[in-house]
Length: 203
Ligand code: GAR
View 1 (cartoon, protein in one colour):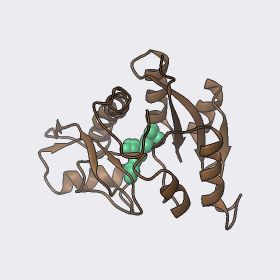
View 2 (view 1 turned 60 degrees about the horizontal axis):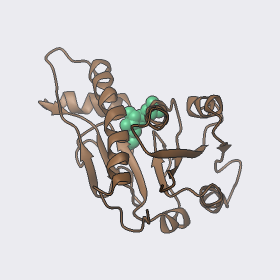
View 3 (view 1 turned 90 degrees about the vertical axis):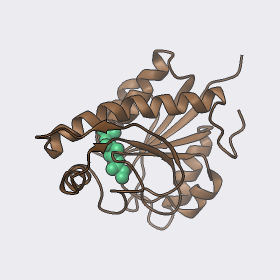
């Protein structure tokens, strides 16, 4: 039987998307194995969650590794035989070495329908506030391939939900987050089955 797809995570905050993917792996909905979790934030919930799950964790930031962060992140992913990198609320740009080593194999999730409502500064409530201010009828998460820019790169999957009358940034965020958790794991499973092909990924 083919071995499980090795996933590496980078997360800065709560890590609920990472957790949803870990849960999908455990429950057999996703034929993959979480191999390592990296955070720039030593207090990140994502690190605590990963420790709880027995997954190796690393706190790597421009403070812990001045001038060498990109190289250390790349090496950490390689050391853990990571095949696909999942950004899960990671608030930093990846460096050129990591992007080159994992070109076409780094995924991100964003809580809006890209290419709109993304880019630097579009995180958390700011995204949903902008969606509501624009009077959008629909919103929903996007899973996309990562390149040098924030929230940029080819879209792999989106889910659409209606914006409801009376929605606040918080109520909209909560409904979108539920969709994020489903969409990220499902998209990864489509990659595992070969239904969705990532250039550079040898299965
Ligand atoms: C998620 O809503 C994710 O879409 C967003 O950060 C949140 C992380 O939540 N990412 C971005 O806004 C990327 N620009 P989590 O830590 O609970 O997974």
